[in-house]
Image (cartoon, rainbow, N blue to C red; front, side, top):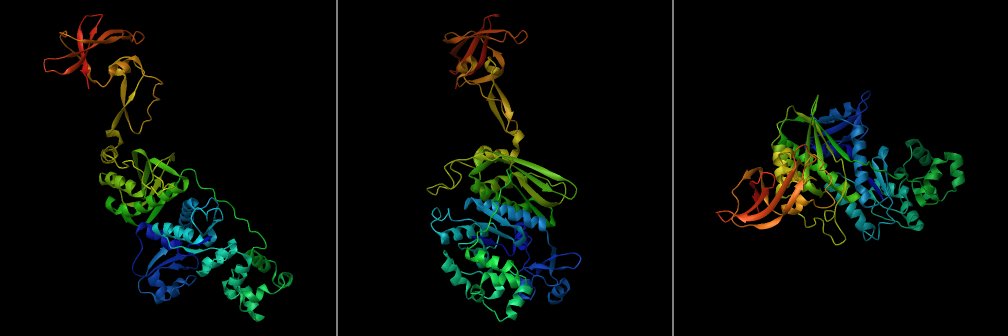
Length: 471
């Protein structure tokens, strides 16, 4: 299968919301400016790729002119190649032609046929804001040709390939214009006429390129497809044509980045628990981090959390672009579409704590993690979500076994000796901590209000203290 993206440079503008309803042209080659592509309004006016900029400006009324950014186009093609790994494990991007090849032989049964697979691929790319043309055939060369022509046929054997090729014009072949003119000069107009000629005679007269192309089209000679290797840590970036001065205007391009991330995570069957968003200014950048309670991949859930986070951000300068980075990819269950079509799982992906963390910041949300200290008031300590907690002990300490579900008070409060109590046990420890040797007898007792108190007697001083209230 060949996925051709003829308007990829224009599609990158759609990601940022920079597409214009009026004429827009993308210009390349600063020495001799020429049109790389134009939007629908420009094409209706007669603008075509390769046209000189002066000619395009002569037929357009005040068009928007945008410079062609090959690095940006290359980055988008790499991202889409990663996205398409969810449909095939063998993906081969062709940056020079803005095209991606997929080996689909092993995927047809999973996706119930080539037509259904093409539909899934096309829907995925269109959802991300791209305009693909897809061709499918038994050979990569034929798939490229059919994608370029928008041809509906899908030949699956050599006879079918030859039948589809025969009526096509010579101009459909990916050959230089000089070669096409030479073939027309000897009276040829259709590819079928070429197929009837001996390959040796064609090689003597036109070189090896033409017969090799025909062999690749028919599958007589196999064609190598280098396997695409995706980056380990995905990163997504958009550059804006105009500076953005409010965080509300960042929602649309951020949604595009999150949709790309979702499709990449689906391809890898992974989720992310934390993301970093970099807002790019002219001379600096603003870094924002967001973490949720468990891994996930769905774009709409991340977008809701990021909208909350951005609502409390004051931009120090106008934003010229943004970069989304996922540092760690984690296994996730229930968030990726499964065998029985459960794309969302049953977890509350945007729960109260996650929303609260997005609004208040990670440093405002603490969690308690166990320690190895024997004293109950020091058996836990608070950690922020950004700091990695220490490894939990293999088994509960005596302090943790005695703690139960009590809500301890710190510092400890003195209390009168209880009238009656239920004995819990003795705790000793801390002798190694510089004079903090403790010997305590713990008990349960009720105070005058009927509350169940967790108390202990200090065996060294004889005093009773209130440790907390039993839950």
